[in-house]
Amino acid sequence: MIFLLLACLPDLSERLEALDSAATLDTSEVSEGPHRLLLDATDYDLWVELDLDQKQGPWELRFQRYLVELNPGLDGDGASEALWFEGADFDALGASDVPEGGWLVDQEDQDGDGEPERVFDDWYLYESADHSLTPLDRVYLVRGPSGTFKFVFESYYSEAGTPAKLQLRWQQIHTENTP
Image (cartoon, rainbow, N blue to C red; front, side, top):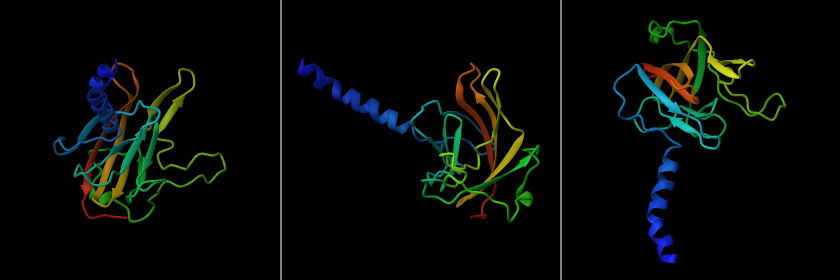
C-alpha cells in the first residue's frame, strides 16, 4: 500500500504544479494586438494575473470570478492605474486620446463596507432577474510601467454559458506613459 502511495507522488506533484500555474496566465504566444483572450477566472480562491505587454514583467490586471484588481492595487508590486471612456470606439481610441490626469488606483476600504475600493468594481451591469453580468459599454485605459493599453470586457461568459470565463480584448497604444 505504501509503495502505491509513493508511486503516485510524482504524478500528484505535477498536478499541484499545474494547479499553481493556473493562477497566472502566460500570454507570450499571443500575436501582436489587438489581443483577444478567453480568461478562466472560475476559481473562487485563485487570482489569474494578466501581463498586458506579454513580456513576463509585472502583471497589470488580475481576475477572480467577477473581481478585477490593478497592480499595485491592494497587494501587488507594480504600478498600474486606469480610467475609462463610456461608449468609446475601441478601434478609434489612440495615443492622442490618453489624458494626463484622471487616473485611478485600487484602494483599501474607504466606505466601511469591509470591501476594498477597486477601479473595476462596476465594469458590469448586474441583472437580478437571472443573476447575469453584462459588460458596460466602456473602453478602459490601463497604464503601467510598459505603456498604456486600451482594454474591453467582451463577455463574462464562455460560448457555452459558463460564468467567469471572461472574453477580453486589449491593445497597446502608447509605450512611454508610466504612472
